[in-house]
Image 1 (cartoon, helix red, strand yellow):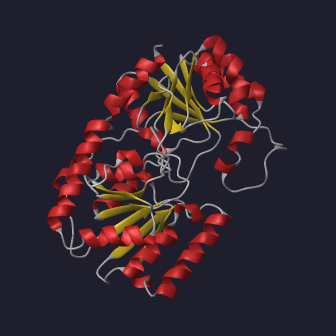
Image 2 (image 1 turned 45 degrees about the horizontal axis):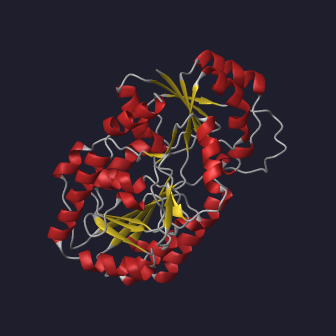
Length: 365
């Protein structure tokens, strides 16, 4: 089976799915608008979408992810690539980006269209039009629609669930060394990951560190690729100096994904306080490496963490992070309990073979 993922970029959250599909015999191609500096391209070919030189709908920016939806492809070159790939299945990251809409006639005539979105399947009571909009999208893709997000918890009690959309969680390969790891509960090393953007709330992690005993240290690993990233990076360094924690904070920039395993294994606790996070995978990678997790509850994939089992789910505030880290501090048994639960959850619910089977079932509809 020839599978093409059509997306803005080959985000690392695709890695586990691609590994599982490749192991099941699928031929994987990623057709993307651009490539990130820290992404893992191990599984599948990555081809860059041919674009027109003049992009009237795009504002100058160093981060292609910000304008990918509006990019205009070179249609002739684009169709040549699609024809040469002869995909049996095309997994489209949404249907609204211009480059996907342009490819739809080809896809619908020659391939099976699968819709991949990161919207929650269970959501607060939607507008009256939402069920009808979903019905239209499901008709276009013949019911082949999945999301890795079950629900984004915004505190709303009443939810509406569209059971016609399949839930396929992100996948993560097993990390053998995680089973033999240890945790330093007396001087825990905290780890936070994310682009140097304000919404990633690295500031919260730094301010939390200032409230904790001097034995606690923090590493922030993030992508530094745009002027916005540089400004935030400089601001965070200045904040660390002002709070007197410079010697306890380590910044890692543009770390290759292959090198991140070392970071996970040499830290003891993972923090994910980001706001407006549709569906992060970093906490799942941390889980596979045996890290307890503290995550903000409105993250689309916060449900991958079980509160009180392998970490804590809360409001992502400085007070919440400080309280939970203090609760863990000096308790080796609790660190180990949460860490081993993380490994067990990741291997049981997020194995590439398991998610690949779910995807192949959707592809076959």
